Length: 368
Image 1 (spheres, rainbow, N blue to C red):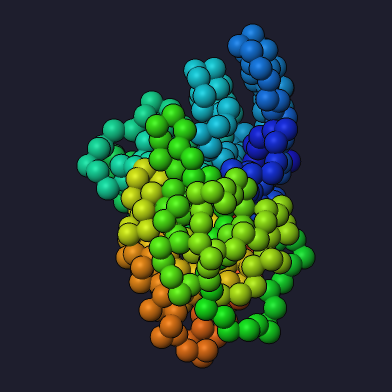
Image 2 (image 1 turned 90 degrees about the vertical axis):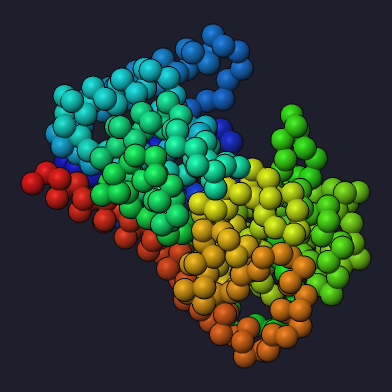
């Protein structure tokens, strides 16, 4: 029996690019790397009784399968704040008992660290109980990038059990970026375009309300919840909302922008500061599309952009007009060619494969 297994959750919802695309792609690329799939069908139910009943049934179905796992299997779990596996004592105890009785080894791939949102640059060394339990149960943690590795090490997690993913891969189906392109000084923004705060919290796209103040740039927006009343400017075009498999075909010109928060001056607010340690999935979308990128210069992934020469970094969006005006066609072509190279790696799942191989190597070393 295959000793590499991935436990994955399926829900009834599957359209929000930023929330479901990355986990779905990990499933596919882990499968290609030899991790046999065990799907848990999760229903979104209303009411406390129905929720608890569905969770009990979920645990029961999981137990029936998991107790047939081979001894010392390597089990991949994707950790999401909306997931089931590390919610509550039952799930954690089940995973702990399976580790004790069957000797399984857990590889936990992190998608988000909620306690780091808005405070990634603050010296708060506390992990939530949920994250602490996840760290305890994991033999290896695959985290976003070297900055996130440093964040966990500062909070007492041994560096030897941490692996950097570097960037999320992106399955684009049969899409391949065209090698023929026109030089155009425009900027694409893809993702959640909601600019209306709820429950007193700032939003990832709050800065869009100030976008019209930055002239001499052609802004092209893609995604849900576009509000023409709050996002105004004769240089702003709304291009629509497309499924994740289709959107790479739409973005063919200029640069993709990696920016979050409430200001055009810097990435401010809880979502903006999260870029200090986060791998934004829109970066993967742009590069899989073959599109060079513009990124906040303090973002963790700014180093990836610079080292792979797939774009440039800015401290403020006000820098973009002058940077684009001074850019030559040959400079853009250089960025574009490098973006196409990275695109091939992302679409093939190369970064996921390498991270899983490193994780398996750590487990093998620890066995000895």
